[in-house]
Image (tube, rainbow, N blue to C red; front, top):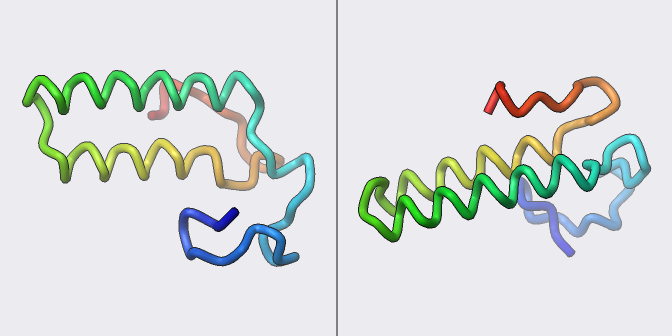
Amino acid sequence: MFCINCGAPVEEPSHGDNEANRPTALQTEYVLDEIRKLEALRDDGVVTEKEFQEQRRNLIGTLTTDQSKKRFDPRRL
């Protein structure tokens, strides 16, 4: 697997592979649900492919931040 931000293998120690940095199942499910909604908007022509990709990256980015320093709040998305 590779880091979605920099492309480096996630096995590298610099990526802090520990429990504190892993998103919870609830966080992951929420982000996946939001991406599905965005896909529907894209397919309906409400958002462009570029907008979809940008928002998708933003959503995925919420899962890759240091979770030990920041609480997940879906209202912030």
